[in-house]
Image (cartoon, rainbow over all chains, first blue to last red; front, top):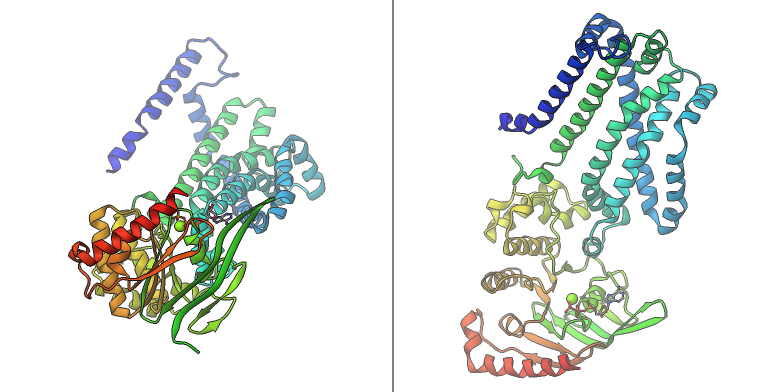
Length: 257
Length: 256
Ligand SMILES: Nc1ncnc2c1ncn2[C@@H]1O[C@H](COP(=O)(O)OP(=O)(O)OP(=O)(O)O)[C@@H](O)[C@H]1O
Ligand SMILES: [Mg+2]
């Protein structure tokens, strides 16, 4: 069973290894200066050599990412419920949410730095702006997709509006919520790093920036590798939580006592 | 005061969408005595479900009064167990949790509610499914679970809107017999909707025949087959005669 799951990733793994090998050969054949484009082995060496510093910065980024995504979830959920209150609310709020997604982060992030300072709060805001939107939209769609007959059934039981929301509509929206959360999880790391890049005391973003400025390109790549791994882990974590939270959605036939 | 479970008097309903008005119910009078099994048949789209929603308190009538247990109240929701055509079981709840949905709404303590649900599932042969998710149930089983959910919420008065309409003939028959068993057990008053004349004759004490939209009551007939009812009784001369009578009545309406 476990083996079969692993086998699912086989093709991707083969492709990645092939690309890495090609890259390695290209650099070793002297087609490009290893200072500009370090070979994969050089990147691994840089990662190992700078591990204590990279690790320290990773923790900071991870903290911002996780906190940011938690706050974005709360905010996204609140927005979804607000959108759901009435069609008037929906028409009032939806355009604002869409506009919030058109803000060029490259312009906003430095402003946040000026307004709030280089501490964690400016990064959290960037992460929240990146992440709440997919959560809010997915959740609002999920809430709206509940069959009207089901709502009527609850109304025939004299359920209140809040009971209908809590007992039927929110649980029914959970699969959509998790789809949104998975997208948000992949955005969140990038958001945190972007926030750090424009100014921070610590974090993978500022680490990359410093490495770039001192032309330590292997170290930049090492940080990129860590970023990718972090994103994948978060994505996997969300998927795992979803599997545990929604066994019925993943083919479980009964609940163990 | 009367001993009627339900008395509906002069119920009308017109739907408005934009400038269009759709007259659906044209003054319906209908009664259900305590413990009686009353069926409403009528052509498709004539307003049967609308009538049910009004009785269940989901819709408000244009005019007329509804008395349940002799009490006229506009906030009627919760006074009847309402079962729509689709089972509408919640996929994230197990069978037993689905059965207690109505009790959850009423804030009945969970332990007590689950104990009641298990007893009911056991009595009607579904206990083995209690911890299962509904996705694994067949259509017939889903309808039985939905019916028990309705019964647990309100065993006294059941509103059943074509509950077996989507089932194959054999499953439908066994569900019908099963429903009679439930009805007898709880001495429930039942208001039942169907398209199916034979189903109406097999199950009911009385049958209301509605006209095409806007619905009026065309006829009220008694089905005097002896109890306990058996499918074979449908072959009796009495039942066949009733069947052809109702059929011709409905066919005339359908053509309109
Ligand atoms: N909320 C509504 N708004 C507007 N029109 C409605 C509404 N509900 C029902 N109708 C219309 O009222 C008519 C009667 O509908 P209803 O569902 O009561 O019929 P029915 O007899 O139950 O039909 P069926 O046998 O197909 O279940 C239909 O023409 C339907 O389109
Ligand atoms: Mg109907």
